[in-house]
Image 1 (cartoon, helix red, strand yellow):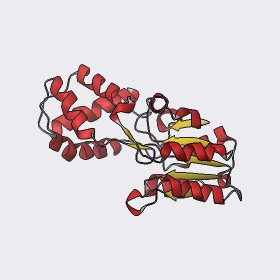
Image 2: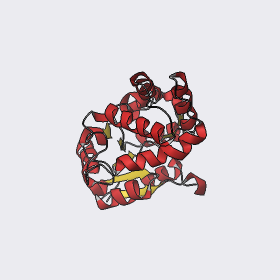
Image 3: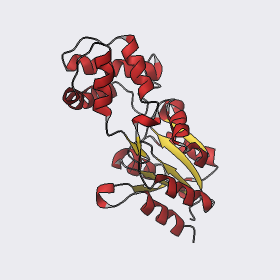
Length: 227
């Protein structure tokens, strides 16, 4: 089957946040929480895993939280500070952190992204984003200048199902008006992106920049499948 569309994961595939620990530490310090970068690096993954354990099977961490995405992030920041032995952050600190990560300046776009998206769009392929993100993703992509390339931006918070659940992939396919076999999904996580896409019937490409497998290679595969 000829490839007619390509879908992309967001974090780790289109962009990254190399200064996450610094941004957390700097912001919380301004609000009286003297957490260090090392503490953020140590305890952030622990807090994330703890909150993830509360999500129902096939659900989404943002949609399932009683207070939505902002409530999830408040719970995560509060738990992060508790694990590191600090006082509970104020509502103002949590609100500022939520805003900080909605800006493109807090993230770094991978160098090949814009060129690849331009080339793929020029071939007539339909492009979309499928990501376990909240409502900030679309304006973030707009801030990056990338939203113009995508016919659909599908988030887990919007759909209520997170990757690797097939329903989030099917939501994107519906928006693109494609069958699963007509689409290639590109992402950096083996479970969420590669196996999730495959289980939903899409072709899949696993990004691994350490091995030279970036979006340029994914684009080459997509173009070859159109010949």
